Image 1 (cartoon, rainbow, N blue to C red):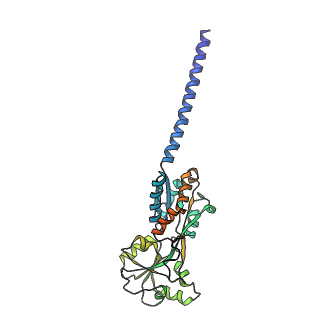
Image 2 (image 1 turned 135 degrees about the vertical axis):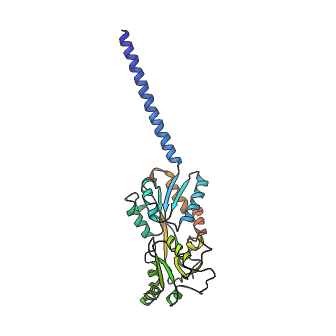
Image 3 (image 1 turned 90 degrees about the horizontal axis):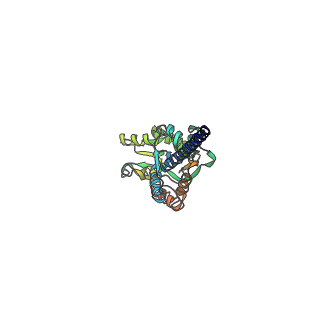
Length: 276
């Protein structure tokens, strides 16, 4: 009888220990999930929209308490990390977002991409505009040294602008004046700094807003101007965090729009105001 009671006691003890261990594991899992959630959101994208995106991230954190880490720059610098931990991806154009979808290897659903705001192609000139450039037509005339970006969401944008009127001579004339084709905006900025002989830089207006000491901006005439957007998408990982969708909605809100407008983006409040 004593042996039977002892066996029963041991069995009960084992069951209690097993249940306790299961509870500890469950508790650890809950704490781990909470820790991962408290780590905030991870957002990746190109350098052009970064000043507005980073300011919006700070405003969102102040509003909600959820930190948002924005990693920006040339795609090769962050794409591998983004595959592992990105909650959202933003782009510098629709073609760029398509490239991201392929590079991210199905980590997000392209049909859920949200275009946010547009910005116009503009001409950056040396401070004070010493060569007196008034618009794109001036860059069809001989004697200018132009740098363009061909890549990173700006593939062929100079050709789109010069060819908008269906005049091949405009395309030919501008091409003769292009002396540098940068692969991305960061490399174009570096070349602009290093080579003072460049007198015109075809790029989005937002680059002058973010770097006012480097250049003045000359609007491209409305009959030639090209617009491209920044868009954003929640990844499959981001779907696990309600905060990711909340951040996207914040970017589209009046508060988010005001931040992007500050950095030169077109919103309902300033649409086409800066264009001729």
